[in-house]
Every structure is written in C-alpha cells, then in structure tokens.
Length: 497
Image (cartoon, rainbow, N blue to C red; front, side, top):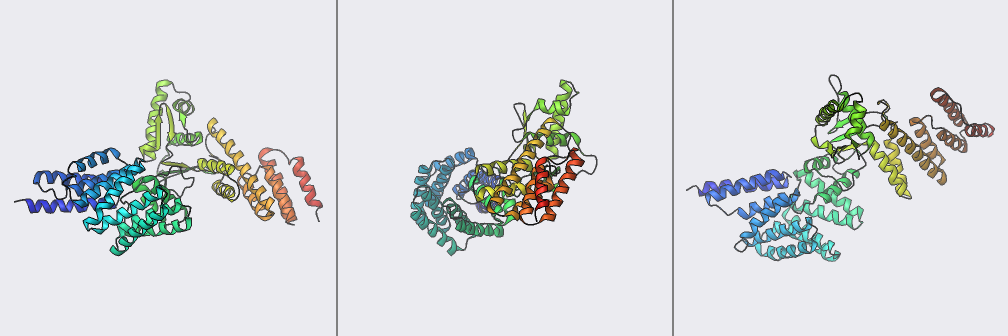
C-alpha cells in the first residue's frame, strides 16, 4: 500500500506550508497546500486536509487576497460538522480574521468567540494563545480595555510558557498596536522593539491576524525610532507594505528614490543608478519632467510636446512609447511609471522624490502649531540641498517648480528664523539664516535678517562680513547692488558700538 509514503509526503508538505506562511512566502504556502491536497485526493489520505486548507486561507488573508481566502474557507466549511474540534476552532478563527479585514467587527467578534469556546477543549496550547491575542484586539475595538488586557495576559502567559517565537511575536505586535492606539507611545515602542527583535532572530515575516495597514504603520514607527532598521526595511520590501499616508522621508525603503534638490541622482533599491556608457538622455529627461509635474503627473501631450517638439504625431507617439518603456526598464519596475487615460505619473507607492517630500513637509508645517510645526520645518530645511534640478533643461514645468520651491524654501527659512527670534534664540536664528543663504545666496532678505541677528549677538564683524557677501553675490549673479533696506541695516551695524 502507498498510504504510509503518501501520509509522510503530505505531512512534510503541511509542515513546509506552515513554514512558508510564517516566513511570509504566502504564494508558496498556497501552492504547497494545493499540491498536498491534490496528493490527498489521489491517495485518500485526508488527515491534513483542514489544516492545509486553513493555512492556505491564512496565507491568502495575509496577502489581502479575499477571493482566494473566501473560496478556501468555503471548502473548509463543507466538512465542518464532521471536523475535529481543533479544525473547527481554526475555521472560526480564520472567519474572524476575514471579518476584521472586511471591517465587520461584530462578525469578527462572534466568530472569535466560537473559536475561543472550542479551543480549550482541544488541549493544544499554541492556537489557544493566538485566540486570546486576537480576542484582546477585538475587545479593544469594542471599548473593553480591561477585558482586552486580560486576554493579552492570557496569550502572553501561554506564549512564554511554550517559549514559542511565533506566538510571542504575535503577542508583542498586537500589544504594541493597542498601546499606540491608546496613545501609550513609550509602552508601544518597547513592545515593538521586542516584537521585531524576535522576528529578526527567527526570520518571521507573518503571523495569524496579519493586517497590512497595521504592519505598515508599525514599520514606519520602527524606522522612525531606529528599531531593527535593516530587518524592517526587508520586511517592508518582502510584504510590499505601504502606509495610508506616503512617508515623507527617504528612510522608507522606496524601490526608487529621486534626488532633485541641488542635484539629480536616482537610487534603485538604495543603489545609485550609474551608466557604464552613454546615459539614456530621453528617459532621464522624462523622469525629470514627471518629478517636476508632481505626483499628479503630466499628459502624454505635455511630455511629447516638450521632449519631441519637432516630431509629427505618429513619430512623437512612437518616441513616447519607446522612452516610457526604457524609463520603466531603467527603474527596474513596471509599476513605477503609470499610464492611465492619457496621463503619465510616477507611482507614489514605489517612487519617492525629495522635492515632493519637501513641499509636503512645508505644507504640514503651515497646518501645525508649536513644536510639531518647528519639527516639520527643520526636517524640510535638512532636505533642501539646493535649487530644484539646477542643471536640467529649462522646460516650463521645471522652471515653474524651481520658482515654487525657491519661494517655499525662503518662506521656510524666514518662518523658522522668526520663530527662534521670538524665543530670543538669536544664535539659532542666525544659524538658520546662514544655512538659508548657503543654498540661496541671492535672497537679500536672509542677509538682512542675518545681519540684525549677528548685531544683536554683538558679532559686529560677522554682520559686516554678511553685508559684503550680500553685495558680492548680488553684483556677480544679478548685476545689482543691495537695496536701501540692506544699506540701512548695514549703516546701523557700523554705528553700533
């Protein structure tokens, strides 16, 4: 009889599928489970069927494939009456998870309650820990913080007793998320640090109850707080995570990062894009223009008119198609450049540009007050390394973006400097104005503010030096002299004892 070899093969595949699930290889987990179920159907060895279908459904839920999960859970439900208690409990646990992902919290709670009632009867501890932890989060959603803490503690106790990395990871992730939701950032950060340390050590990239939006938020916090940076970046890439609001920082591992402030450099998976031979001029010009147009992008006509002004319609369209293909190939990802309804844009999920983030931070600072506004301003100032695409061809869209960002930068420096002046922190204000003029050395208002601050600090010589630098920059670059306001401030500096 082939039963024993077949049983052994199916058992091995069941263990393999579970390993693939916990390491975040969801497609492979589903594939392995399907192959095992096919062998089960041929051999008549069905002992692992519910387990295999359950983990295939779990992998589908984890990757957000609700259709596959729904079909697989439907298959599980057909034999539910005759199923073992453990498999029934597993089914209800998965149905609860499915309901959470569908924002049906009442259904999620009802199914988790059914799972919880069955689990102790199975006598098998690992899934009991998972049910306690999942129930804890549902109770938080219902506003029962006390009940949630009891469930978390029960799950933690079982996970600790088993010394299981899987369940300890799940406990710490869900507890961290609950702490952050309750504005307990210190506790949340500690739990998150522990969770990602476990995951890093044991190569975990998945858990039961995984929700991509939650994990993306936690990963963003981990990067911000310096928690397991390399592991976190790899987790984001592996699970294709992206938060609801695009991160305005290059610490997020965007597949493509484009630096345009004071330079033009492109990084693909954190590797500088370099050319051994002649650079691909047209694809790079298209990239420059798409960044200049902003996340909204540009129409095909705008791009073809700018890049091929002398070409007729058919030739221009052919050139556009070839250049778009080459740009996508250059960026090593078809998803980076979108073409929809005649509109071309860089996908915010896969492409980050410093100019976009600089502008977003300036706008956030405008909407905030107090220390938060100052933080946004400081971050924006650090990001601004110079004028937008200083060496690019002077296309109208590039000139327009240059002027807009120049204005934003000047307003940013003045806003931050004025804030420090109001505090009486003239040294900090002077440092800001100095930094500002290093980037834009013809912004006369920055010299005026710098001279006044240095004068207040008793640094008369430096104030005179600032005036001389202003006069020199205006003369050499604009062919003009200092304004009457600047001359008046200079006269005051000279008179001051």
